[in-house]
Amino acid sequence: MIDELPLWLSILVSVCVVLGAGLTMAGCLGLVRFPDFYRRIHAPTMGTSMGGGLILVASAIFFTVTQQRLVIHEMVIFLFVTVTTPVTLMLLARATLFRDRIEEARDTPPSDAPKD
Amino acid sequence: MKRLFPYPVLAALLLLLWLVLQQSMGLGQILLGGAVAIAVSLAASAILPGRVRFRRITSLVQLIAVAGIDIIRSNISVLLILINPRATPSAGFIKMELQLTNQFGLAVLACLLTATPGSAWLEYDGERNTVLIHVLDLIDKDEWIATIRHRYERLLLEIFE
Amino acid sequence: MSQAILDWSLLAAQLMLGVGMLATLYRMVRGPRAQDRILALDALYVVGLLLLVTLGIRTGSQIYFELAMLIGLLGFVGTVALAKFLMRGEVIE
Image (cartoon, rainbow over all chains, first blue to last red; front, top):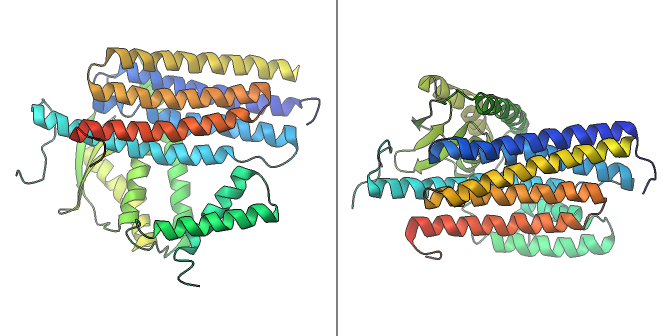
């Protein structure tokens, strides 16, 4: 551990954390603002792609400097979250398409699969 | 050797993951992580649909760079839509045909499109090789299809097929 | 001086993440349909994970990292199970 935080480090970490948190918050507010499910599905990916990335990079830089060794295990979380969120969103979108088609909701794209 | 290492790249990545998580490069950790990596890659051979072959590494690097730039750009454009109180984005569905048939290539394309905030991959039809994509700010359908073709699909075809 | 900058910006970031969590909670309570609630839950756990990471920077301890990773793993499995349930009415086919 080092005793005194260098100024450049605190400014760099601050900028990354505030930008990342702002993007994540904007994504969550989009969840409230957009009128239908298919639009809302775009909102949380802001938090998982760039918002989360910036916060995790800030954490990696902070611990690498203060502990004076390479700390990159934040990247594991980043990789995991960016790979898994598309999977869950795709599953949810398919479930929603399926439900909308059963209810014959308006503006649902028709299915290609032959009816059985 | 081949029987013990069916997926050498996967095993190497798993070992790297183990060492990063343990935050140590000691001999014990390397041995333990290697054992876990070999066991998991053997188990994975039961569920993986086939071998991944990277034909062109330069295209892979190019794809990672393109994806990074696009994620940043699309974050900014979605943010601009969100902070504009009057904007109602004209969302819409696109159905497009793909030339890409490799399963890993399709998986990478699906993750890329969904991870960028402006677009989401909804449904893939394996028989016709078409995909349904939802776009948040849809202005020109053909432009989107052309962008996906030229920016991603071309590179993925070079990498996987 | 530099400690103060870091403290205040971390506070601001945590407040913003808190607002984001409230927004997802609103969507989770209001719905209107099951898939909207699950989408909100998915976003909620990601924001919670990021909040733990900022907490880790504030306290300078790495214990929060393990918690954040656990939330990431469990949240993924949970959302996938819920989405499967919406599609078929059962989790394991």
